[in-house]
Image 1 (cartoon, one colour):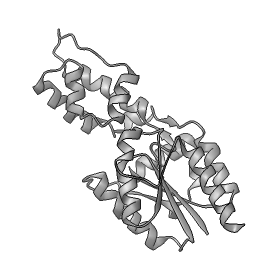
Image 2 (cartoon, rainbow, N blue to C red; image 1 turned 30 degrees about the horizontal axis):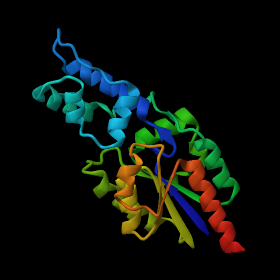
Image 3 (cartoon, rainbow, N blue to C red; image 1 turned 90 degrees about the vertical axis):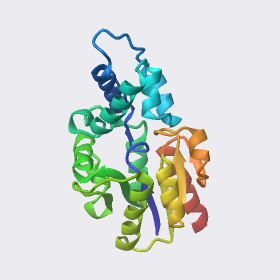
Length: 232
């Protein structure tokens, strides 16, 4: 049996608009009343996020002083994963077609995400994605889980998945961050990193995934081709 474990935000969901809306809100909230700031365009902002520029530095680049930038960074952490902003998430181009292709090919499919249960359920309902992921194939954080760091928390989800899922002959993971790559490598799972998420190629290359691909569609095509070649 061939299995594909995919991250959610990045390969399936484009979070860039949510992150940008939160950036706009936090910039407006932390600037002084008469202060002129240099609001970044969405493209400029997302490029900085993808290259892992710290939030505080993004605040300073936007015209805030040190104290404001610290407040900006804190407010952003408190806001970015709150219910009012999840409505800005949208599907990554080609993601649904890729998931349909996985199902048609008979590949075992699971999702592994740092979202909490209620956040994942919201997105499933919003974008009609629950049909791809039965409950027992969803690995996410409990609603009351105290997050630490993705690179610490996500491997715990992988441990759970490898215990709870039936054994597979071959497993691939698809993700868009260093946490995904580290998680897969720590558990001897092959990993593809996608360029359609929150890290750029330079950042992803540092963690040496097995492959770097454009998006979930390309990842799925490669997995299907590899399964066909193994059969033949």
